[in-house]
Amino acid sequence: MLDVMKSMDPPMILWENLNASPIVRLLSLFFTYFCSFIIIVLSLYAVYTIDEYRKEKHLIWLPAIFIATIVSGTKYIMRKITVLEKHNNEASRRKSMVRKMVVLQFCTVGLLILLNSFAKSNFINSKL
Image (tube, rainbow, N blue to C red):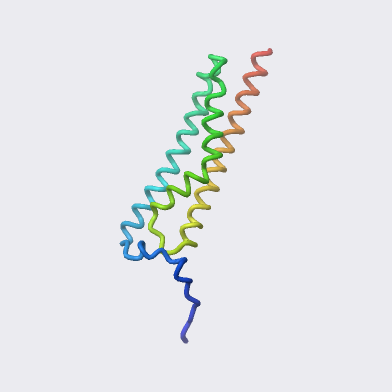
């Protein structure tokens, strides 16, 4: 039995990526995931160093601004990073971008909540 599928529209095909080898695709995918991981690690570092900034009252806002910038810039960052991947079509590229964006925003929003709880617990402990 012959299984026939509807073909994609030509504008949706990323013609320049069709000749990329599987190894090049894998390496570019690894690189974009590595960049996403670095962004998450930098956010974790900002939250970890909040205790140092807490000692100097005028710098306590610095990690929060760093994480808020990452949350607001996630869409831009993922759009630029995902271009480096070698997808065959636009739908695959967008799916990859959304997947990374959801993970990054989930992590950074969680870090903001963690940062907020640190600030509240430190505020309560300083009043006691």
